[in-house]
Length: 163
Image (cartoon, rainbow, N blue to C red; front, side):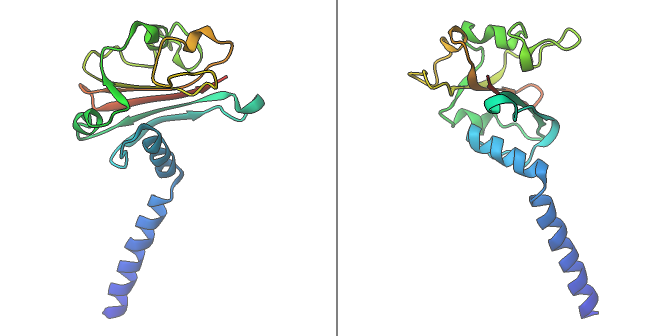
């Protein structure tokens, strides 16, 4: 009886350990660290990573669904701002900037949400203030992170773009 109980406990512990080390879990934790959020309760809907090209160019694109609203945790995080975004981000949000933002079957990657939050960080070497959205499109290369949390659907959209 004790042996069977030990085997059951061991099987459950191993299962939890393997799930915690899964690639999906590691990706979700890495994105959560970048955004300053705990995303462990999210379900991965989409994950694409095209980095690995010339000089690491490419993009990472992810979508996560949550059963519970993250708005309170996001509102307490200084890296996030309430929607709507500034006009400088409109080409990214409406899909006209191309790349990972382009329209797929007439729908841009990011939702056209009016209720929620956005995160923007300009990671370009010429960025004076990495939270300002106005200068990203005036350079020959783009290196930034953009995320949108749609409060109505409890869905997080994430793109890290490097050219």
